[in-house]
Length: 232
Length: 238
Image 1 (cartoon, rainbow over the protein chains, first blue to last red):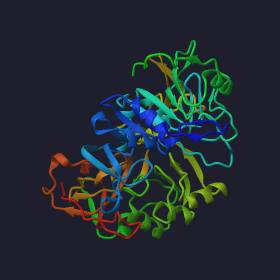
Image 2: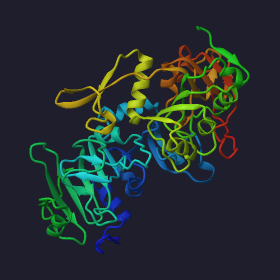
Image 3: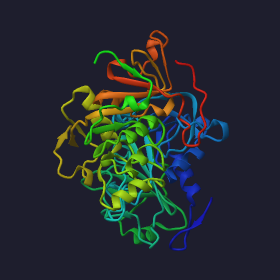
Image 4: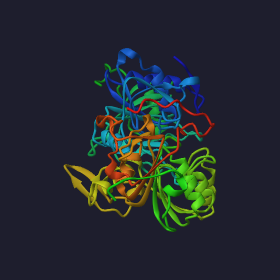
């Protein structure tokens, strides 16, 4: 297992390890959108036999890996504006169609980064809220609420050592009650976003105990580490 | 206008865009950005423009130059901040440009709604966020929705691939993005295209934007590699 030193000096998963963990939970045959940044790394751990089709919100299904050399075509880019390639069976469509398939619930999974996720599944990932920062939302608000399942990838702690899985988000929200699973360097969390009594279950830990995770987050985490793999 | 007007110079294609006009500009980053039309608009000198685009310009190309020249009063977009959006960043921080930030799916659907004659629509996107503050909401089938209104423009400037002389348009790959919906949402739509072929040379099955939405066209060759000066080999018309 790949490791990295976190803000508390713990050796949890590194970025690639987090990406691999998220990739493992993407169901066979899914249509998936990977957000800009860390989530893009998930594609490296999806295999042809997984038959996963990647969506990019600027109008394509069947996106292939980043383009290099003569394959670079300025008319073929991903949402991060990086030149990419097309897979056999790819399709193109305009922006309203692209977001209609997202907002219409046709994508199975989207994977996003986050500043904070709350125990109730609220997501904050588009704006720091600081006046000097220029806000940019892109497709984040549509992705967060549109896919059948929203996964988040992030380090559990920020640079100051504060947990990013929180009781209530302090950063401006991207979506309400939308996050299903959270993949971090220290643990994997599954959120049950029943508004009456949201629960957060730890399904795997990496160099941290569930009790330590409770202390780090201040949340009454349920221990699911001994359970069989939860249904996808 | 029932017949599309074909002009030979981008300068003529953008004639009549007044100061204060709302102008939709196609493109996602530089893919599908109608650079020749933007350059012509810059040359024409229109000011106080309200620009609708996904972004707020990058580097020293197209929309970024329009912003740098203080021609844009307001940008309506989803993602202004990029590593190379320095012209917008500078104007924004100096209070010289207004920003209306719209979630990308709402931006696309508001443009689509305008072209389709939809009065308004409810969407879950943005509910409970700052970008829905003050907007009407409604619970539909147990889910919270936000009321969003159409986004229209006086002009749309778009980039397409091959056109026929009736204004039917095809696109290349992800350069399609906002082109088809902007074409329908503006009073006057101007398309810059790689080339214009006689009617009958495009397979009608492959037309993405029917000519009914297009008012003026100019053929400018394959410029999609404009950033580094490289030109593509363009594909077949279909």
